[in-house]
Length: 139
Image 1: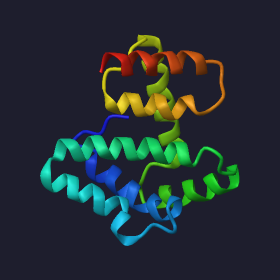
Image 2 (image 1 turned 60 degrees about the vertical axis):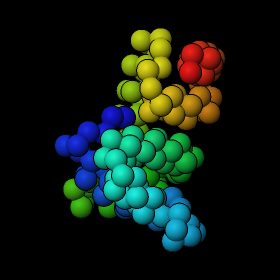
Image 3 (image 1 turned 180 degrees about the vertical axis):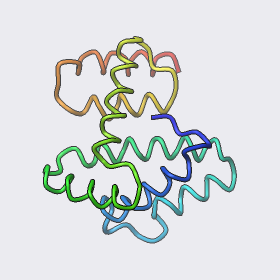
Image 4 (image 1 turned 90 degrees about the vertical axis):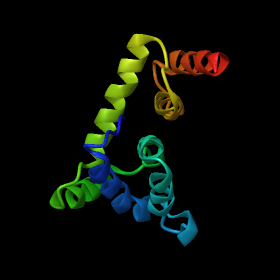
């Protein structure tokens, strides 16, 4: 998922709302928003890249949540005007399919999207691992 200047604040807010849900026992110094804001102070581009990676991680970490839990969270997020987890998962899935069709990982954000997707059993799993290996060998 690409984060541009135009959607950075909205997606930062999304992460802020999901952080406590996904990382309920995080130490204050490990708060994802605090870390992200530290990156933003140095480089907005690095902050956008880090936010995209963080969102991919949340998609991965919530993969085993029950449909009831996802639905409840989706309702809360929608009520405050933020994308639902289900919408983010769909966008993530489209990104992965696009990368697989292209047959090449272009950057670190795509690498982490494919890496997270490769952890889930599926028909494309071998293809995903092959893409990861090719990217790692080219780096």
